[in-house]
Image 1 (tube, rainbow, N blue to C red):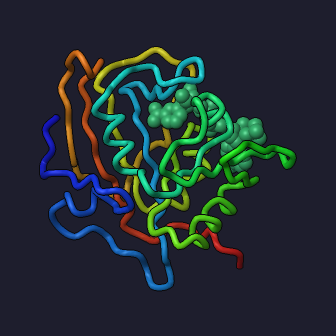
Image 2: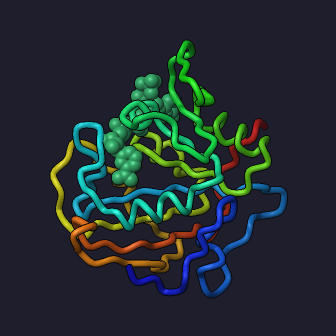
Image 3: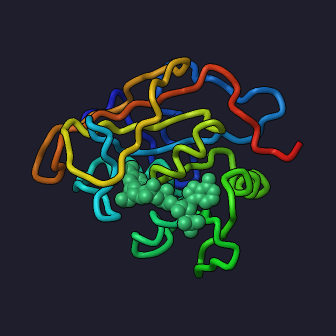
Length: 204
Ligand SMILES: NC(=O)c1ccc[n+]([C@@H]2O[C@H](COP(=O)([O-])OP(=O)(O)OC[C@H]3O[C@@H](n4cnc5c(N)ncnc54)[C@H](OP(=O)(O)O)[C@@H]3O)[C@@H](O)[C@H]2O)c1
């Protein structure tokens, strides 16, 4: 894995911030928390197959783990149900329209805005929306950042994430990896930063 600069992986920090040269956009006056999407997307938009990741890319998984560790992660119901359980070392928030839903070790809410308010009330500085596609789409209007891994292959799948053009977002490459025994596909990792202020998730 070739990083442009060394990635700081200490828990509880936003490792990527210290690894990027130059100034990233700051929070606007009154904002207290960055909202970030983090996803791996194939060239044809595929992100999932049979409710699982359709690839094994160890170094991107490490990037995901190191970046989100210590933070609030917000997940769609299908994504979390497909995993073996809540992600360790993170506060897991699950979004579902089902008002009766419960899962041990998970905070359940019924919309994205409630998830973001919950994270902010905890004192979170950067909340991560970790998918799947339906949740990414719902959360995009609130997002400051998108940590986007592009999997450099066309991959068969049944869930795609394509939110059209990311015009108005600054794009910078922050890492890349070659195909290897551990990484099924080559990939790049970019950080997209919104230049304007996202929609507010706070109650008016
Ligand atoms: N490549 C990647 O980076 C990545 C990341 C994550 C997931 N994935 C893949 O993506 C697939 C799952 O994605 P998906 O789009 O099918 O499902 P999903 O977004 O994980 O979950 C969808 C469910 O979440 C709830 N939900 C989503 N948005 C909501 C909103 N705005 N308000 C209230 N509830 C909301 C609903 O739950 P209820 O039906 O219970 O109401 C909805 O049915 C899997 O294949 C997974 O492996 C890939």
